[in-house]
Length: 256
Image (tube, rainbow, N blue to C red; front, side, top):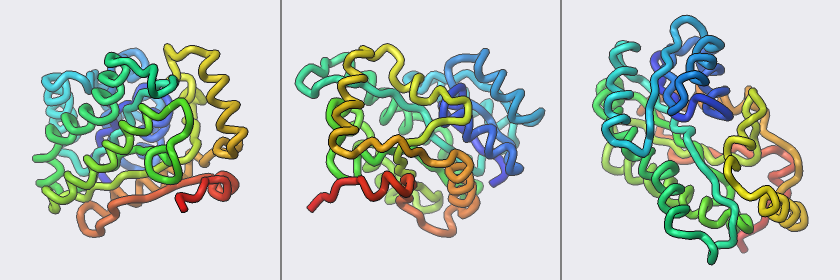
């Protein structure tokens, strides 16, 4: 784990991951849309961190940002895709624009960034990790975020496709339970633009069902897991890793 590109690094989990990996000795390129926040995060990550503006919904932007990252770092050994957006609405009320936004960021963006990074990752026999959600793969989808869960399920399958077609790179989906970034704003970022009343309704339903317990993954543990997966490169196949708070794990509903 020497040279790592973190996508979605201007806030929330992505920001914490970029700073945390830098703290463990990696040289990091931090990619996201907002330069001011990227520069602040890069300042906390250290003098070797490189802030690069990237819009994951734009193919040319992805290619240019990854090329700039590879040039600045001298190559790419690892990729972390932490970009993601959420919609909170009944599934039948999810409109075409919302579906398009979810898939553009949570799925298509991951594909575009990976395609741009693939030659570098292949050359380094490196690894790529994608943040997914228990709402997509462990138990039933959580009420009122079904469209989000669907996009994350698509991301899970996308990771499998990359691994199948490109075995010279390690591809891993990291399935997470509740986790808050070190800056404390990951939840706020995820629900930006979402109707607060709908969010309150969703949380009440999750608590009633026992899905949401108020316990969170330790961000330092998350970074340790990520660092370990990235160090494996392609040598050890880790198609899926799940990280869930201990108390919350008991509350995850059975699929039986």
